[in-house]
Length: 358
Ligand code: FA5
Image 1 (cartoon, rainbow, N blue to C red):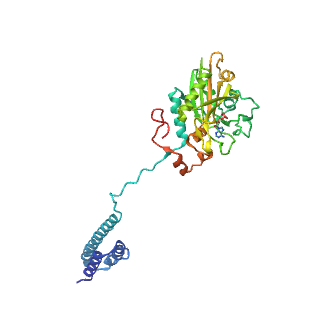
Image 2: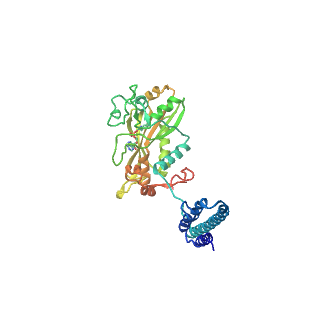
Image 3: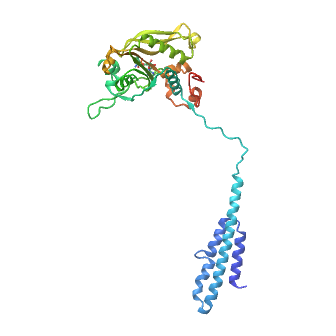
């Protein structure tokens, strides 16, 4: 057997039994690499006498092709083995139970807002909105709030830095500016509710610097205090889901309403437990009143022709009462355990027909 035949057999046999792709690669480099045994012989061809060179070259090329083919065949076989064992290892057990879908919860603020919209929507109110960053006119002046009113003080209101034109904007301190924006944008009659976020320099167990309110405004030719009382009575009874809920309208003061009142609902606190409904106690839940003639005039309305009522309530406050949430600050701590406890099913849409809260 010639030396070349010997080399051919050795490489082909070694390739056929190469146990892994790594070993096969070493074999390929030793045979066909830059310093491999077959490559070395190729380089020696030039030194042969011309009459031998052609035959030797053909023989060497044939060996090179055959060896290369054997290595490639073994490589394909080894790759198939690797794939097979991976498939066996990573096999999927289709009989395992499926993982339940990740479940989110509706935050009690969103739930309460949805409940409020369902109730007022049913009464024929439309939703209006205004900006969180307001100007002095809409937040204070047009609402008949005098220059010296404490709410305008730096320690109560978040003011923004003065802009290039000397105007100082602020984070609205209530949703009442939406009353002004509504009355100035379109002619009466109006029947709107305005949900939104006001901001105040406040922080304790019942106050946060950012909170939620819902504002209501009704303007028409003959709207009177009886309508205000009827509307808020219906609202409170629907929201707290207590048909005979006692209500008390207590005289109060807001610069933008005259007369003004605060609305209390009946409750009992016996045994340290608060329950909404008949009882010996009262709980304040909202402010309201007949829109002040100055406010109507500031919006270009003739107070002899148009009149109406407005109300505003704190959304966290009524959510806390209805759902027994003791600390207002926890609404904004983003604690998932809290949300799992107080949250609501994502696909339940509150409605007066289907039920407000489940
Ligand atoms: C007002 O903001 C009036 N604009 C409401 C109004 C509208 C009266 C229309 C008349 C006519 P007041 O400052 O009382 O009123 O706030 C209303 C409610 O917002 C409060 O009863 C309370 O529930 C809630 N609230 C006020 N400050 C905070 C706070 N820092 N954190 C959480 N809730 C608050």
